[in-house]
Picture: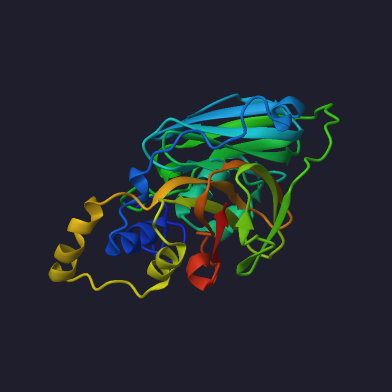
Length: 313
């Protein structure tokens, strides 16, 4: 990795890779190896008929999709055809912000400085070889769609060129607010309103950032038989000593089955932003988690308590 590659947070090891490393210690495998079919609402859903669709295709490391869209509620779908997890953060430039300024701030790795240049409207996230959707209301303006998930070396995908520009013009849509069957408010450091039990089938959750920092709600569907309590305890445990003996002891268990079947949810969004997350809930255990780093300490929010489980029956 070159010295110019951005790292968001004060410690690059405190990232999604922490989840992978700590999960493997329990013999749970690696998230990057997960595979699942589409989890987004299908074309026959009410949302598909009501809201304009914007579809992005993700690869390593690029987006393919439209260069223009109209403002208003839009069904944002991420079709991840890559082998790694991706999200699509819709970042709207502030007045006077140029693409050059944005890219320069992005490459510094200073998330706080980046957010001074505009606002994140959230967006979908999807595991490898899957699709996921959110509905969000886009305002007119210039957007950069980016993926900040790190590669196996901890380098955010955007540093590899995973950025796409989008111009949103004034629209004429009069589509109503989406009708949600669940309301979750993200605050420091919890998911208010997250149910303990959910019925199987199609759902739409209204996910709002009611806090003062950036937040996301990643949802991990666990492999059957893998208890959520064990995964959360693994993530919250002190890091394993990086001795040769410890590395050797951990190596065999990483070859086991992956602990997660799917990643979906709402990408990092500014305070006040709302995404409506569509998902087809299959029976099993799930975890809601926020990986965004705390500006003051660089510690990811999940290590500060922003992680919770629920079950689908």
